[in-house]
Image (cartoon, rainbow, N blue to C red; front, side, top):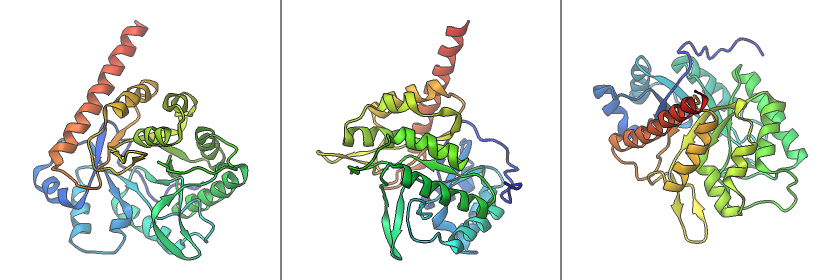
Length: 288
């Protein structure tokens, strides 16, 4: 792959960032909060110009950005939307993100766009299909991307691979990286009855470049990855196991619905950082 057009001149990110939402932009502009980096929802900022775009360019002078996309439909069978990918590339040239990510899912079918991240069957055929599409996307963007493990509410009877094996092979065959969402692992594990810790023990952490943390909503018969609550105790426990395997991986607090004040997200980020620091201290004591 050629040298990246999205130059990544900002250098690597570290620590726990937060998802930057519209309601917090003015707060960030005027108060310069102590947050190491921000992730932006790329699809909200693809149109040229405007005050929000100008604000992001100003914020970018002081903070590192990561891009999180929802519209690539990597698992879909409709042709890739080349104009959409070119818009992402153009925005990257303006804001220079350290990462660009999307999901292990599809969201279009027969030209119809769905406001959902729909799950895939985990088979050799679907693996080859999505790897081919990721390779195409990476060629267009001229960079490696990160693929996020999904939260899911149904599975396919003809699946032949566990999700963690599918993710590992996808990262290897498409030469991409993984965005590991700990809340999604917990939600899917509860919904489908598998062991979250088995997932973590089998995932290839050498490919994981970013970790997501968010809050789910308990709907009684299933958990919904709603991003509208604080992170649960169960997910914090799973995060301890996750960060124990790779304490240097940067983390991100997601909150997309019923969004609270920025200080609440910072409090969640502080908890994540405390867990990270305690984990590293314990590792040092064990190795001493």
